[in-house]
Image 1 (cartoon, rainbow, N blue to C red):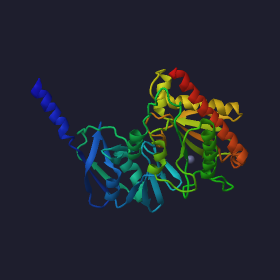
Image 2 (image 1 turned 135 degrees about the vertical axis):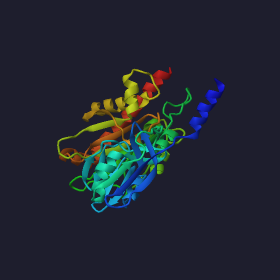
Image 3 (image 1 turned 30 degrees about the vertical axis):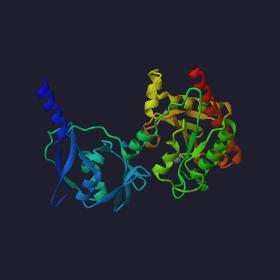
Image 4 (image 1 turned 90 degrees about the vertical axis):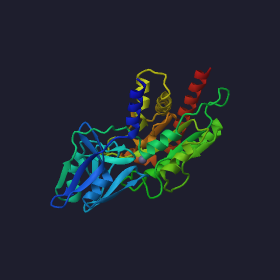
Length: 359
Ligand SMILES: [Zn+2]
């Protein structure tokens, strides 16, 4: 048994032999790409390699978490785990979502055959040289996920200590990154910051714990800077504040987002590590409703901004800038204060809940 086991391990350590493909704009000599992973006959090609084979260039934008491609039709974008290619303001569905494998964002042959021609403006020649080799594909986390799973671990507070030691608040967007904009020019980044500052004051005064804001003015943050406040040692919960806009004027109210894993854990009734976000979201929703603010629901979001850690984390979409009534309210200090009061109540109730559990 031993030598066989050793051989097996040695084979695993030797790493996968990669597949290879040829790509070219039709009529040009093909470029061979050899950094290709293959699973079930589907090749995963590094998007940078595929682009350079057809004379295009792109780069990873770590702030927006998208891969941007310069084309003659303007900027195009793909995002890990999203089923769309965006060119200018148009969206094109993808058969396979781009994935991070071995540290690079990768697309499949379907992208090369169906979407790459849209970007280049001519048909693409494509050939898979080893359609039957399978290379083991290890599911991997993108740069942001890595950062999150590294940083956003729930810390175990001492049982005798305060229930919530510190709160991190991330007012979304800032600076050139305005977020959603209303028809009147009112910007999401302004609502987010105003409510964050009001909430911060309430929490400091009434809970007497430190509050870390990712930004306290109108400037753009890198992902790392955005994460810094949430990754502090004593932070026990993290709120991300945003506002949204829809294509029509009807939608309104607050929506709460948590990680898909948190929803699953809660549904399976496990008293799992991931339930913190769900409990926090429920307390926030209850407090908002009590103060007469409409709550649309608690949703799971694959939005990568929430990361994969188990720190209780909720993204609050404070309202719709596309709804005329709500837009007007969101711009007013009174309504911002009401939102902040309700969120403060929710955090306080969440702390009480923890206290009962610890008893
Ligand atoms: Zn936003």
